[in-house]
Length: 123
Image (tube, rainbow, N blue to C red; front, side, top):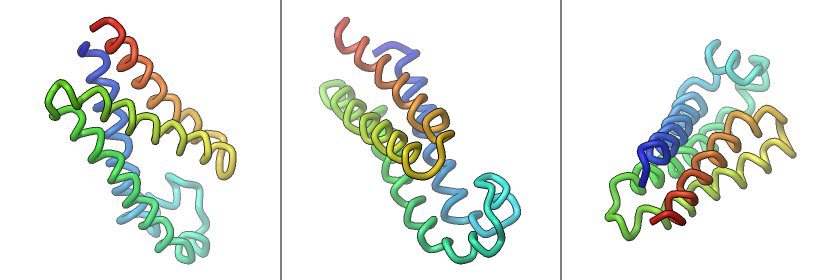
């Protein structure tokens, strides 16, 4: 696997670890409200839902980290699966919640997926 593909997978994992932290621990703080453009009332009412969403982002990050340390025969299939999940989640989020999710979540995952796929084809 190329260094570029690994770096992009790691970037997507890092993004999702960051989403976990914000959604689970900082959602109802000035930083979290600013990051997601939330009113204090909405942040308070949706904090439990955000924590659940953050947990799912953590699972995606964990899967991507796993794919980076997995044996070679598992790495690419794991990356394709988890990056595909991120792309689908990003497209769905962009369609149903906020268009910028397409660029913040789906685009980095799609670029990483393309790099992994290209590397797989070259091997």
